[in-house]
Image 1 (tube, helix red, strand yellow):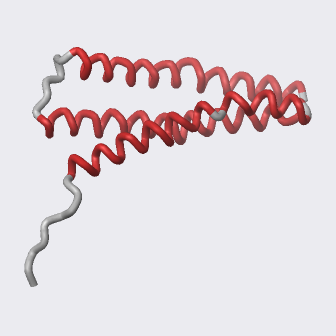
Image 2: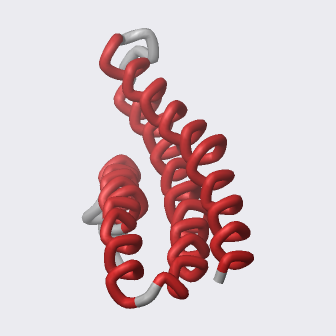
Length: 122
């Protein structure tokens, strides 16, 4: 049997994982904007659930997605032979690290406090 070359390269697979992590992992956080208004329209007793859902999305979807974005980004830069010092590459990494820092320092900690507060009030 003859060895057939792979139809997909490691770089192409990396790009697919990278784009999927951006679209699914970070895109899911945009849906959070409708959680609060819908919960308030139904019944404020749903607010603890809303905050728990937002916390879960930020912890277990957005944070791992950011890690995948960073890892696959590093792989793509090194595989393609680009320079990390290029503005568009270094600026992109700064943006991803800032999103991760804001997610961890603000969104996750805020959702913890809001969940505890709304649970106590309801």
